[in-house]
Length: 287
Image (cartoon, rainbow, N blue to C red; front, top):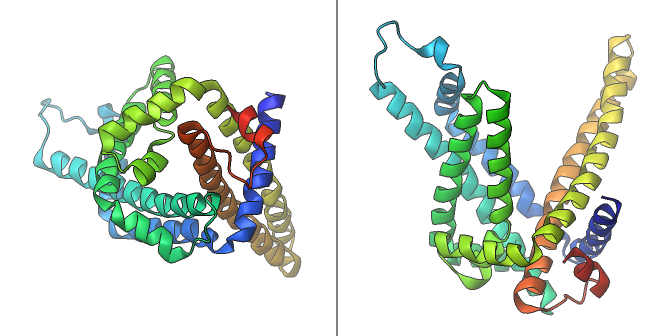
């Protein structure tokens, strides 16, 4: 655990140097977040319907045991569209960021236009993968919500972890190799098979660091709320705003760093090349 966390920390530091060279890359996760909020706003009714679907069956079943109604079908389709739309937005901006990172790793000087051009050039693959990933994500969510047994929920959670791990390299595969969803999934799994413990270990280390940074960001928020509650809003409000600003910064920066690291790991795993911005031992220790 310590070794993996240390490896994740080293990768994070080196990816931070890349982000400092191309500060504009932080705009990709920012735009992704804004777009996801717009998608959520536009799908407000399907989202509320999904909450109804997620309730235990005993609360929604009719006395005569009637079958699925047209409303249920529309709810399912609306929820599926919402999941696919969100996955499409996330994958699109991640693809743009990874494309820029790969340009930097190969000696170029990427721009936002380069990232968007690469993402737009792969719109069919991105949409097809969003359809697959969104469908799987929604089904896993429904299974977990409609399962009351703790063991069953745990098994569904493990299934979700396995799916997330197996598809870890799909986005860079789509960006570089322009494969369709099924071929990209198989390619990602092939890469993972040779590096699976190490890749997940690096993710674990990075995740620990991000979690600690987020906990630190919550400290001024909590202190500010306490000050506000005891009648000191002049002190409390600035602390809350500062904490929320720190939290947003951590989310945006960590998202950008994770995509940069993913691009570096893919380049090494697929082509055997270590980016100049990364130390050889850091990449090799991740694999």
